[in-house]
Image: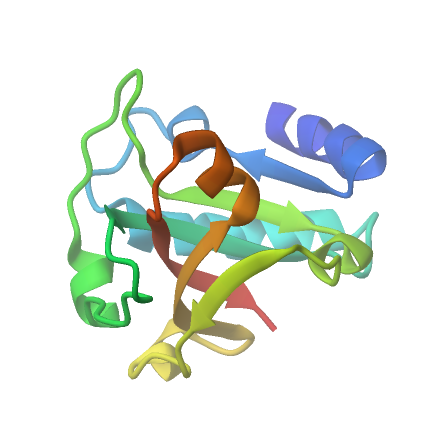
Length: 158
């Protein structure tokens, strides 16, 4: 498994790694979030053989929001699981991330809103939870001059 070797190297060097779904599955699945959750479970189990404290998450990007106020509206978990994705250069798609325990707890200077656990998280299976997150960093504001909020649904191991 090339991705396991790649992930192991990056976890050792950086404390985190990204595993691209389109690199794992050919052709990439149209219903990417469902597939990514299944791949996440396997990736975390595989990584924990070497890195016992590793956790993982599926990052589901949502459209940015340019409102100054934090955007709290988000799709439901069942709707997110049914989303269909197009892959290709420059397209944003769900990603799988593995994080060491210390990296997952690292402090970041950001404005962030995080919802309560999304309804339906229990249907993901034991050890997984889903929530909505909106965030922006001061560096992004200074660089772009805008107040755009990055919005995501996060499905992570607990």
